[in-house]
Image (cartoon, rainbow over the protein chains, first blue to last red):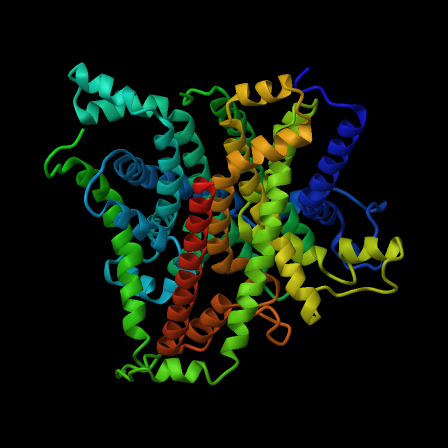
Amino acid sequence: MLYKYKWYEKLGMYAAMLVFLTFVLAPFLEAFLVSLRPLEAVFRAPHRFLTEDMSFRAYVTMWESVPNLPRYIFNSFFISCAVTLLALSCIIPAAYSVSRFEYRFRDGILTGFLAINMVGAAVLIIPLYKLMLSIGLLNTYWAMIVPGAAFTVPTGIFLMRSYFLRIPKELEEAAYVDGAGRLYTLWRVILPVALPGIIVVSITVFISAYAQQFLFALTFNSIDNYNPLPMGLFQFFGRERVVYNELMAASLVGILPVLFVYIFLQKYIVAGLTAGAVKE
Amino acid sequence: MKKKTDLFPYLLLIPAFLLVVTIVAWPLLETFRLSFTNASMRPTWNYVGFENYVEIFEDDFNEIILRTFLWMTISVVLKIVLGTVGALLLSAALPGRGLFRVLVMPPWVVPIAIGVFMWSWMYNGQFGMISGVAQRIGLIDGPFEFLAYKTSSFLSTIVTDVWIGVPLVSLYLLAAMQSIPRELHEAAWTDGASRFYRLRRITLPLIAPSIFTMALLSAIWTFNSFDIIWILTEGGPRGATTTMIIDTYKTAISRFRFGEGSARAVMILICLTAFSVIYMMLLMRTARKGESR
């Protein structure tokens, strides 16, 4: 009853959803349609949605044109997973520290992290290149993992902190009264309660790591076997004659795995949030 | 729980500190140092004082700063407004909500470079979808090349940036909405409050802190947005989409003027810091006013 809608409210909301989805999905539809056309039909005006010459040919020929495609997909996943692990091992303790303890410079440290968050990777690319060169990380996975993690840490700390703040302090105090150590309390009492938050933060980190591999790969890596998906496709299609239909086909196939992972985890996020484990 | 010189909270900070200092803080200081040099591809360089800073303001740098703030403001406002609407739709108890939740997120999940590649085809005047549909329904007479004109390319890059940013804003605000205790809505409903009234007096005030936090984070990300403009227009046509970050990258990487590029990078940081400080001050003042009422 509380959530029962009148018919015009329903109509309005479904209309809004439709507009929203059109905006969100139109580029994917366009990419899919282009991938189905033969190359000469791609460059044909006026624009038509459906034509008779559509086929899945590009999805067959692209494996010859982009022989390393499975490798790129694997690399994208591998790099993002490593970034997430590294970032979480920095984010969770730091966020716990700034949300739970009172100490000198705490607010200064928090402001410092927020300030660091303002620095985009593109701004620092020259000194970063020098750094990677001097410690010998150029052309390794590490050159894409370590900077990728560093730039997600400040935001991660901020998001994670907001979850820790919602956990009542009495929970820890009870654990301390029972004689639990502080690391033990963090590991066995706080982390399970904060799990929904940790899941949301991990997914956020994973996705942003996955979305932003381009710049680091472009600058720090020249070994094709280590290239993540966007870079792999970019260099292949940076050639004289751009084969748009195969580009779109490879892009769509390349993003399918992460879409599946997201669809799977998405239920988990929403469930974690609605479970209200963190409610007082 | 007050203890004397407790080291535990500091120890917890060490991993994050090490990572951030090596990858962000040190290169940042290095950028400041380079900005006072004439470093380039040549093997030797000298300290030149504030010469770089004087030089960049002799160009049309003021215009670039204004354009960057305009670009960022339009984009962030759109992201927050659409994100709030999106979060409300995502939280609505309607059949098909699960499907909607899944379908809204792809722009956020897909690598930015690949999403932008799709958009570059959408904006194509001859073969792209937007121009094609607009012609068919009679909005425009002939092909319209979105990325060829100053205003339209400025707006097109914003639309793509909003497209990438909205899903995360929606998801974040949805999480905030779901942390509102259900009892509040039930109590208000029992008292006969309409849906719109509950939205205005319960939902929006309670998620306001999340909205303000998200707006600041989003502003910072948008200010630093690089891939989208670079792939779509490289800052053109005739500089119409050259934001500070694009301008810096062009100077430093494309023209190999590391010293001058670093000075432009430092200006980005100064602008962003000034913006964030003013934003936070305004926010705190508003919050204090709200409390004293």
